[in-house]
Length: 157
Image 1: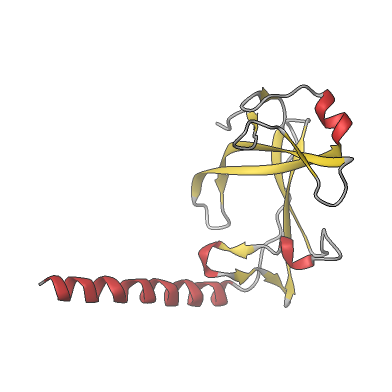
Image 2: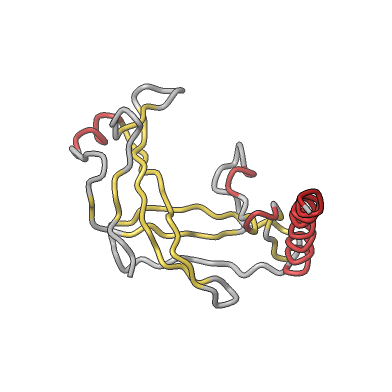
């Protein structure tokens, strides 16, 4: 079962983070433990987060406190057009620790998370078609991580 959405905060306890570029605007970070099931049917409990943007005045008017539970859900949304036109790489959907960008027909998939007050809101996923590239990168990564362990065990013996 998914947990409630929790309001995050800075180490000093501030909930509203003010934009460095414009002090009238800011955001609140929220997070939720969600049960996710990937394209291969593997489930995991995962902490996901989203940012709620607005004017500092409006965000402060919510009166939210760090750790407060609020209604709603955090969803993931995939799409084939960038969410951010000036920095499209920011939202590339990346396959785990491999660093490989998930693609469809050679075009990158973009993923972003959103807080929704409607608890029936659903994730929007796009299935990638570069599974072989991802598998190869994962295998290479696994092998490169195994080499230092093998060397360490030889040195210890």
